[in-house]
Image (cartoon, rainbow, N blue to C red; front, side):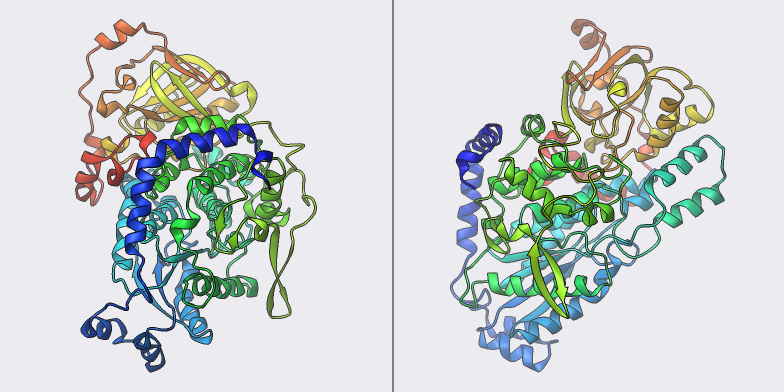
Length: 609
């Protein structure tokens, strides 16, 4: 597609990002140029260094590596078998090593990175470590690749903070040809609508723990990613639309012949792109540029993706020297149509989305509407034409065919000419309480404007206790503060969704305002999240009092408290009671992170503060 066919807003935002990022991007590219070496990455290693590299390898691999002719792949894995999404990665290293040998290359596990499950830690003390685990993963990825013996890298990760962390760490070694390798979603279990219904019944005391556990176990029932469209599956979309996955590979179920064939093909692409086989050299830094980042934002908006990426994608871009902000998200959201409805933005799950045509159809629609940069680099080579193809097995051979001409289910995936809504549903809210983001793609129009008295708490457990005591049967805006990155690591507050949804269903006007996060599963209750400046940094949210009238207007992009500026500024900042934030096991280890972390709009990363 010629650039003259691009939407003018897409062009303008991309140009603004490029100009804003010129100094930092230039410094990053200089760093990448300095890292690139002639010959293999390990050509300059001493003999003892080389001996350590190959000591535990089979004799055939030792010969290849010592000869310094064949590409050598480093595997960075987030495998553990506590995360259903990552359990399939257990067998990947052996398959990768074997297939690398078949094509004349070699591979080693360079290192592992931590991978915590947000589903397990929701509402628990461990959630205080969640956001900062992203930066820990980035550091661990860099440690893994620091051995300087690899010509290419494979990143094995799927979920919430894990893919952003792998991405940020890999970019520090962006001179390597890098492919991200997914594991795929679990097959569909209990529908997300049914699961949500049982959660709301439990919140009201209508069913007991046994019924709730049975429901959850039927929903989360097998190896693979959770099937709702939260941060984990938004990660997979981003890696594919940015050209770092093989086309059509994000949502192929684990344990299938096609999944195995795609993993082998990922090895082949890493080897081909390494610059060691006579094929064009395609390093990670070349793929991740300003246009690829903008394509990622567009994909997020067009699919109703996770609000967590208003943090993660900012930090991910900064790792490549690219500076984006919430204004960029908001301006693009105004022109990017919502083309997918996947839970919590609809009743379908990601398997239904994939069956309807998936990312291949979605990307074709966006390109046709002038809403994707096609002049980019990907792991498949220049341009996006390869992403108009989908993988299939012709016997035992991996083959590619054009994606379907149209969506197989218009209730799940629509053409750009007939979208679910004309905008992407992610909006920026501003006012005298600061800046925040809200996802309205799952919020009905009649719930998008709430004007009600504040109920102020410093802990989601306090709000849950008030709900159980019957104290919230009224119109109100829940202000849950001291939940920002500096206060307690910015935990997700997903436990608040069921009770607030119950109250909304009863006819009350309810909303949430918080300097914390609401996760990729942000649902039908309007939630102004990531409020910045956060309360612990003296943000205006810290001066709100019970009963103050708050307006959350997602249509006009307004978040304000009906207190005049002088009165609000004159209010003494409360001495925050953070005692409930001091019980998280291991929390003290993240003291330096909290002390140096940047604000939410800067990606909440101490690495780039």
